[in-house]
Amino acid sequence: MKNKALPNYTQTIPTGRFAPSPSGELHLGSLVAATASYLNAKKQQGRWLVRIDDIDGLRVKPGSEAAILRTLTDFGFEWDHLIRQSERLPVYQDAINTLLHTGYAYYCDCSRSAVLSRTNRIGYYDNYCRHRKLAPKKQQSIRVTTPNGNWSWHDEIQLAQQTDWQATLGDFIVQRSDDVFAYHLACAIDDSDFGVTEVVRGADLLDASAPQQYLQHLLQRSTPYYAHHPLLFDAQSGIKLSKASHAQPLNKSKATAQLCEVLHFLGQTPPTGYEKNSLSDCWLWAKQHWDITKVPTNHTTLTSN
Ligand code: GLU
Image (cartoon, rainbow, N blue to C red; front, side, top):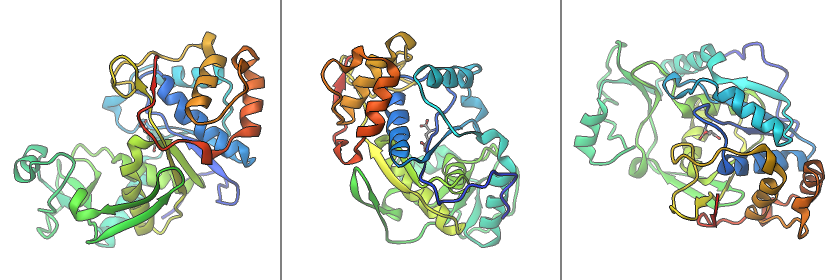
């Protein structure tokens, strides 16, 4: 497999990344992920990449990418490289070909409703097509064969993790029946290709880590370390802040206050009244004092957004 026209990214420099989907504007929950990944990289004099997860055209909202980048700039983030997944399709295709050629992937013609009626579970596959040896055909998905047993790994914040493949997931999709590459595949490859050494992101993606590490393993690529921070929930609705739950977009005029709020949420303790300082002073304090061991595990901290 070849890396296509990449800068010379190796794993010698600590490298973090923030990977928003351009399906809406950034909100306070996104600021938590951006801040945690940024500070963890910057504390180690590392690089920080922004990756726009835009392979699924149906989820892309026009204007979102520009709005996301504008907000990041307004909030004082500086990135070393901008990656768009939509520009990396040949690399993902190479990986699919490799998985098929090495026998780790197979075609599947099960519809979502057929799987659901057999398993009664969402997000789980019963490996029905694993041995059917279907020939390539339009409107079939491609799945990767998962082993029996557990996948164990360590998360810097959530600590010891274990995934029992056949109890929780089964053979998962790497390319959808509409030909869109699956998030796990694209993410696993990009994290390796861009020399990402640390994936710091929200705990809603904790379960994504085992499939992504497994794909890196099958494709003989490097694996970063992982740290999944707790999620922000809206005080009134009790719902996780997300684009889907219509969380308020970040507001430039509140940047310093919101950064301080996020720092507190992440277990960091800027001095009382620090939000009255300039944004750059807050960043300076945060870069000097960031300590990932202080980030709480707990997901349920509430905020009034
Ligand atoms: N694009 C994904 C999201 O916005 C995040 C991917 C990641 O951090 O791995 O939920």
